[in-house]
Amino acid sequence: MISLTDPTRIAEDGYDGSEWAVDKLIKAKGKSTFTLPSALKAGKYIVRQEIIAHHESDVAYASNPARGAQFYPSCAQVEVTGSGTAVPDEKFDFNKGYTSTDKGIVFNLYGSYTTYDIPGPAPAGGNAGSETQAPAPTPTFATVVRPSEGASAPTEAPSAPVTPPKTGCSSKRRRARRAARRSL
Image (cartoon, rainbow, N blue to C red; front, top):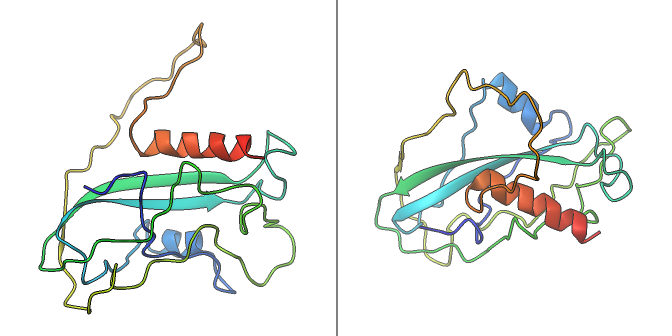
């Protein structure tokens, strides 16, 4: 399985000059489609989708810790089948990958703009390596675990700081935000 610490970006969407990616997502009732690189080696992978909320990103977190870009990732495990042999070679460390000086992190959504620079690296080439394109493999999805409904929030604050778990997509997001804040 590809590690969450070495992901490769294969698709992105931001602002196309008239519509934001989140508006497209809303119109599609929360569904987003992308094509896996056709030469991708068979195996288990983590697909990580991320939305950056800009409603308070006109000010860097370092300038005002009550504001800043907000990251909302979601992950799913997939198993790719097929005869591809390419392994993604472009890696992006989400724990340290974004800084407050990166394009697209501090952004005034309420100002005048015609473009938006998506932060992070450009998506990897369509073949996930150097091999020739072949028919796209069919991904098979692992079971999705959803949070239980009806879970209640604690009624009082914990007496000691709570340390988040060291694994999983949301803890990676938290650590990435903390690392970005510390690098400011």
